[in-house]
Length: 295
Image 1: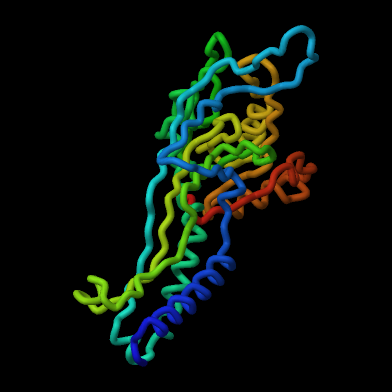
Image 2: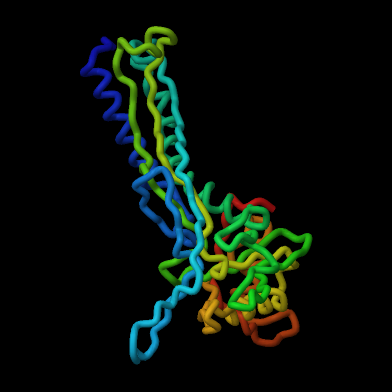
């Protein structure tokens, strides 16, 4: 194959089609627990975290319900994934061997938000959120009296999570400054081609993940049993805002690692308990297994 601009542009177009197809077909789960937020700068500050909204009868002047503002900032990070195609392989028309690599670029780009979001969720016992506490903690300060409220249940078992994903505001933010974009170096006079005899094809993005509202999620490292599930579920439902009003949290997802999936699925979908009684939590939530959660 003669290497010229037309040939190189044709290869780029072909690889782009392969990338887009693989990207479209790859699975992704992060939107189950995270909200997409566009970014137009190097970082976004989420001062509204911790604010509350609730309708009231309009008597007199409007009441601004924001009791406290915070300065939680998420800085965008740059990510890339690049492969090199040998000049010799182009000359020898041996490009078919690169198809799996380009497909994997598409797959990697699609699941990268999953890795960031679920990885961040898993680190919630050690990373702080907007109120200065760890995202999963036993003493989040709530209300004027700063009453300690927990969304973390300590133990030694594989972690499982209850999530309220029914609202526009999710527990995790996925911030996107620049979307995943396929591009290539196709100039035969470029330095990389001259030095290494390679044409580069890759993907880059400017994104990051951060914590939103801890009230929308709880983590337990206790045994996944009906009693422990019920305790966490009821405690989430009882959460109140800083103004003392019910947040009306209702968990919709039981998120587990592969180790806990069979147990979780049986717990939530079984008609009856081991003692023969009806299962009171049957189909109360949706079980979601995430392969990016460790055991």
